[in-house]
Image (cartoon, rainbow, N blue to C red; front, side, top):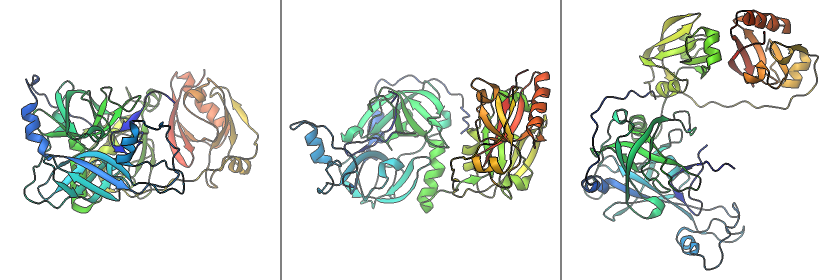
Length: 483
């Protein structure tokens, strides 16, 4: 395993961190602010509203190997406190306990933390900065953004934190983190914003603030502050070879979190906008193939029948360049913006189609859960025809190829049987089982049509735009054929 790891920053039992699988930012100009002589006044102002989250759940016997701690090890005290989830099957186990951080956002007792801090918890206990403890109710969680909202029954007034504008924070600005690293209680660290809009492949809506302020296991769910004492991020993950801080931490921006938190407070669930398209990144080859001067936007690989985009007139092969007035520079920008759009709202969508910009009015729908299809191993061996310009062996879609590659009965086109190492098909990411449905807009029914279309592209010294189907999903691919 590589030494590079991303860790969620909660502590759960003796294996406290879970390995993490990475919004269009419009920053505003701001005057540079020097580091304060001391962070003490800010700490005194905000710390009372930062809480210690402790969770408990029943362990499953025998689900992990015993840890190799020798008798008399200092870890024995840790195991006495938090329990040992590694007891052999059949022996009674202590409950698994985890720790994290959170902060109060409402004087009615609402608390924000991370989803992974409270995931599968049977009991949740909140300890305030003044030592008061409360049993917390889980109001709702959103795994896709790793956010959760808890509620306690307050006894008297509660200190409350305010959210700030995370879009206004700039790389190089000072930030401060307060939390509960390793269950040690309230701890304060400071640093700068190292980067914006980081994608760490944690989910479809990644837009993290990166900081060098020390964030460790147990800091999860704690707030990141600007120098005005406003919450501009929720600490959630670190990049580390060992699980300890090396100065690369990540926080969910407040502007992304606030709408999610508001929905969780109100209903315990999150509803997201839905456009009804499957999109992919526009590579340099795809940009060349569709006539864009540079890669930008989100290429529509498929349009859901009778979905919002279909009803508005969007088509497969369109490149979405703007949504509701926001420029789409990369494919990952679009899902975040669509998800945050009010359901039922009409928005203007700009697309690049056939060499020019077109505009459509789309009424946003509600995103529903979707199921993935099943795959089976191919069988059989068809006759093939080699296409040298593509660097792949092609065959017609017939009974034999349908059986071998598990293709649907109504699928038409040419199937890729084999891909040559280092050829144009391999460089474009094509693989056996892909079905070529169109090349440069022409419907494909036979291997010779592919060869003819690629020959025309090669003579023009340009990439060809292929529409292929892979595992039941359409995918556009830009291929630069051999001359």
